[in-house]
Length: 380
Ligand SMILES: NC(=O)c1ccc[n+]([C@@H]2O[C@H](COP(=O)([O-])OP(=O)(O)OC[C@H]3O[C@@H](n4cnc5c(N)ncnc54)[C@H](O)[C@@H]3O)[C@@H](O)[C@H]2O)c1
Image (tube, rainbow, N blue to C red):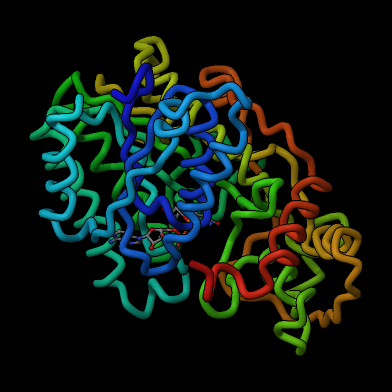
């Protein structure tokens, strides 16, 4: 504990979503943050900026102690190496202990996962088991896990509820699905474990300050950061839209884009819900898994509203003032017409509220990109 704050360990905290989660946790006033990241896909600068943003949000009357509580304890380490995790738990044992973990770290590129599956299973599954083993040994059994809507594969019905069948179509998706299964089994084994998996739909945008945001290495795999980077002069070849003959209003694929700060705030909601026994009842109906008595639960985090590729291009054009060069090409294997969340369960049981709209998302994405055209590269 730091003051009244509970200590949370965030794995993969320097990455896109992790850095926004760290900020939400600090701004909530309820948590102090310890991190582990190997910077495989991120820069430690992000964490320095998070601390500064949180401290800047304090009132002028804040004491040095208040400011200190917002300093992130940064650990460089690899969670596929058990001792790297263990060292942190050992260190915090004498400092009041870690209350819970938000497990964000993972490799996440769908295409790459099919090319190097062993690396994906090692990094996303073995590392998760390492983390669970150390947590169990130190009796830290509160966990929020970064899952993904990709566990649903091609759904039978849209909007997608948590009880939809789980049939991931990529190696990456299977690492998320298998991790969820492991987490559920661990919860079934011991009632002390409390785990919430959050199935993210399509996070986009950035903190409104433009100080932190998404900085993927190489060509972004996701639409919104790709459009943002095009608007600062990268990828002059323009955007390929894969198919405009889908059964959607304008023929292009529809996805559920959620502002990354709403997603991040959803983790604070989940941490707050972990101690509540009620939410873990009727678990079977809501996870897509069979019945069991453990305290495991999965929730969709989405806006519950679909946007097409063409709508996103138009919205980013409005935000950035950049006119995109667009070419419609054939459909891409594996794409499904529409993926939209039913977020009602998270709204009801976690008090989750995706309040930011599309305009704010594109404005914030562009604010981040235009302030940081090269991302974090070269920053201290
Ligand atoms: N971005 C999305 O669209 C999306 C959608 C659904 C789910 N997710 C999940 O959300 C999580 C975060 O995604 P993101 O977009 O922020 O990705 P990211 O790559 O920006 O962040 C992941 C972080 O984990 C770190 N990391 C990876 N392997 C590690 C290891 N072995 N040890 C220590 N650190 C390690 C990386 O360096 C990076 O900082 C992932 O679990 C991902 O699967 C992301």
